[in-house]
Amino acid sequence: MHDVNKAFLEKALAAPATIRPDRLAKSGKKGTVEGMRDKRVLTDGTRTVELHNVAANNHHAGIVMVYLPKEKLVVEADVYNPPAPNAPPPATVNSNWVNLSDNIKRLSMTVDQILPLHGRIMPLAELHKSIGHAH
Image (cartoon, rainbow, N blue to C red; front, top):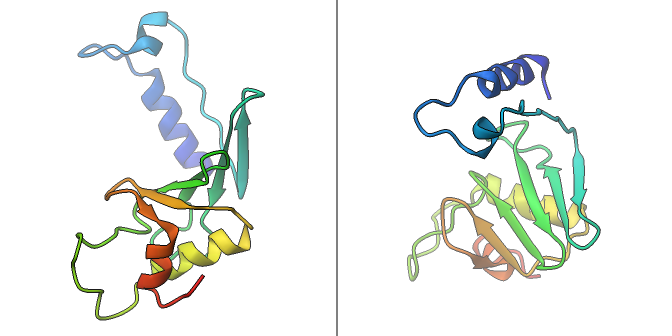
């Protein structure tokens, strides 16, 4: 994480939450900011959550997707926003959609579904269909 971003987040976490204090604010503890580069794995010994940088993405160089291996699910924002149900396919292929597909393949993820935070959950096959890839 860039030092400027980390400093900003640390300052924001240190500010008192006076309107709607959350559990962290009520606990009196200080929040922790941790960075990552290409990958970060979080586990409690039973469940695993993987955070991955979406490499070569033109939306934002630091955009991250979340992979839940047990669920075979990728969660992302601003990379793939599926069209409305029964909408015609886009006239041109969205390069961010291709980039997401390429990153899933590059990372050898076993994915059945994608959960775009600005859309509805979709089968990975729909992403591949929309970009002209048969997988």
